Image (tube, rainbow, N blue to C red):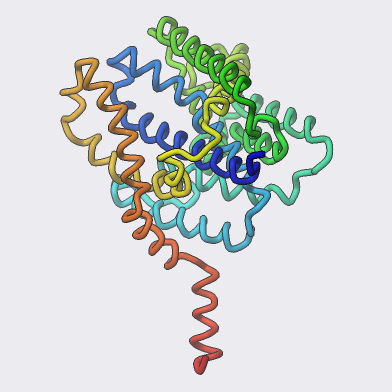
Length: 339
């Protein structure tokens, strides 16, 4: 019988690597989404499930974290990169206005702080209530990018799904015949979504719904029907996310080791892509092969940023920002200098 705990660890490392690779790929192809129907469809499909799945995994592992120092380290990391992004983009540093991808770190902090108030009973009603709140919050004009409130509330149901799903069948190792059937179904499902989007969304702008960051009044959709689009986004995210998890390998792969370094990839890929956006590279990406090469390039960037050399450098940053380590050093220096 397989070691379930080990297989489950491999599963999540595999999932995290694939998801952070999709984050990088999504950002790499973003400038071309309006000029290439193929990349536009790829972009939309990626955005349907990659962050909801990431948030679910964050919720799942929220069970096992030592909250105080872990949260403080995330706050310090968020502050450092907020300063870096503000300097790089020449914008004003505002702590409560997360820049670009930093909304996720800010939201992660808030979601974990909220766990003290989340009941362990009536889980179904809690999750359904969070989905309802996520739907209704779109009607408020007071939530948008400030504090990332729109995303914090709208993605919160996925965090709770992960938090409550410790014993879900979805995470478990499956029999070979089950794997073949389920993965075949998942491929068909994702392919169907891709084709529908490729053929349907030529003149429709769904981005403001799949980003979950805009109030309905800014989405250019009828306010009376805006909730339908939010519900549709939720349903599509759940279905495509479920299909994605079915495709994630349960066993160790060549990329499994990179799944342990997704935080550094997530934060550092912005430093790689931001200069790319300012160059004329995208004007030369016209042929189908160049577009495929761009997708492969996203995977290679992910592997590079998850490599040992980058991990070593990032760990040095984490050590400097580690509040527990700095607290021990402070007490040792001033109170126990002879030890």
